[in-house]
Image (cartoon, rainbow, N blue to C red; front, side, top):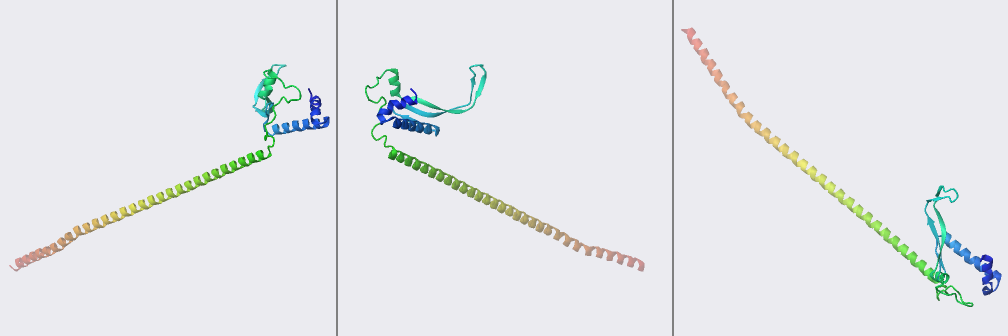
Length: 220
């Protein structure tokens, strides 16, 4: 069955050949556009159309047997529904008369506008919530990092201040020790000078005695 025969088969149900052709074209166009966009078109009881990505691979030329590199590509794929499979395999019989072989959509499922809108609204809300959570996490992380930097800076400043205080204390202690050593040295030096000063007159007395002896000898 080709497209023209398909149109003829449904023309009576749709009120004419032109209406049937328009309906077939509209259905096929909608399926193709959805699959190209990456969406999955599923018809209950019939099957689903979807886009499948094939990775790059090696294949063989059937004529020459040569190994050929095949680039990455995307292909459409149709998967038959369970009802379709059962009818083809013969486990279920086709309905007679004007009954539809494919199960009819349940009530309310074709009104889809409101349902789709609600689903889209839910998805949008979920995305916004996820974005807000991510932003909050980033802000919390940044705050923690800033607090950690401040704490580290405070600790470093405190260590430097403690080190400076210790160095100043060491210098003061060293200066005190040096001053005490100078005073002790000065005390030890002072008595020695006094002793030297008192010994000098003794030498003069000896000299006088020697002169007196010489004078007495001359007189004799």
